[in-house]
Length: 261
Image (tube, rainbow, N blue to C red):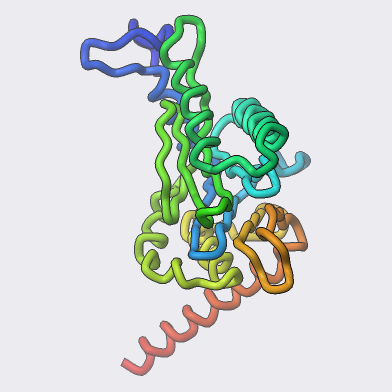
């Protein structure tokens, strides 16, 4: 489909200055199911829609813990994501062993950016076909970073990657001013609503296809941070149901206004 004379390796530029293997890797990210990340002053939330290859198979995992203060959401090739996830775990463990503290998020993201860029500069290697949202908390507060197959990384307030992610990003852009002061529960609600925007009409968020992960700054009665916590299956049911209830209430209000007019 994409075959041409300049896509055999990642170090050959086309006459237009393009590296096609990097573009193919970016297309793999766009084909993955959508994941959303949002930060406030105190918390960072990751939400993901999981897929199953067929009715008889299990749903593919989308959220991974890297350290107690960091985690990732993936869109693209899961096998490549596991390579990067294991690399990040090793770096975090090595940093704790050497310095006795958690690794700063910026340093961790820079390392995977450099690792990915090497694959775009050496013959015989290929770009990682996965995009990541790297979320975590350090001494500077909550952070959210986007990682691209080219090795480029950026810090975000809120972002979404994957299939139909533009719909989720539109929702995030409309509500971005509210995120900074949101509570933990409100931030999760926003993340699930953004996910819902990206679904096709015949699909809904369910306990089987939805995952939520939360990290936060120090909470009352706790020492240190609120560590990475993954909510899967029925653990996220209450949040999923509340998003569905709010959606129904909003539609009901809209119908009432049309009748009155």
